[in-house]
Image (cartoon, rainbow, N blue to C red; front, side):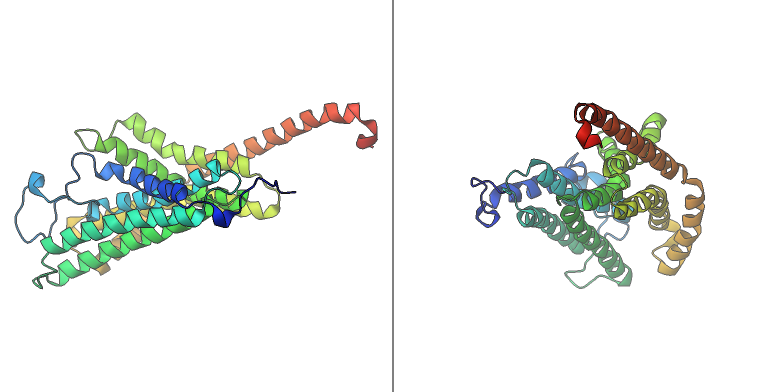
Length: 313
């Protein structure tokens, strides 16, 4: 029976949940603001500008940062959802208000950044050519996709049921490792990080997914979907990111969509062929975790059965 002191969810104040959404989205975006939030150099910028003279932008809009932007946006929603789930007591937090907070931050940073990018590429004054328009539309489309998936991630991870939460976590495991790498790079004076850090970040998604699978378990059987998705996520997503960055990051392609698509299609199966090991590690960790949980449960139930023979029969 529900307690008489439990407040009605419709009367709960919205501002705590709204603040959680705003804070989560902002924290996940902070790597792009380290160092002053300068817009990265643009290949199609209409005025020759030095890196330190590039305008301020709340998003590092650039094809070279496309995956980083996507990850920062996505994790804003996922983190907000997890926070709502963990701290929710007596229905005092509203998922909808948290989602609104995330969305507000994402809309603000998107409008500000693309207003700057549009001005620098001559879009607002009508001097932009076809390549500038394609670049602007492509980057904006990717950002919108990140915003929408952030909302999906929030609604999955904020649920009370284990299955959607586990699904949201395993899908965000690889982006989370990417975000850590982005944050580390933001605080260093050189691009990249030591090899041992790269190895940690390579295997971190497998550990996250494995622990999540152990927590999720296999009953009811519908939770096996999480196992399949988790294994595919730590296998396919890194390969997909690699192919996308290869296509977007090469100046040789000069924005030729057909050539870029062909390049990505060539790299993707090669990456898939060599990036399968984390999926195996994740499944092993998950299986071992489930077995350990079953043994612990059985050991804990034995004293109760001995003290209550009638129940054991």
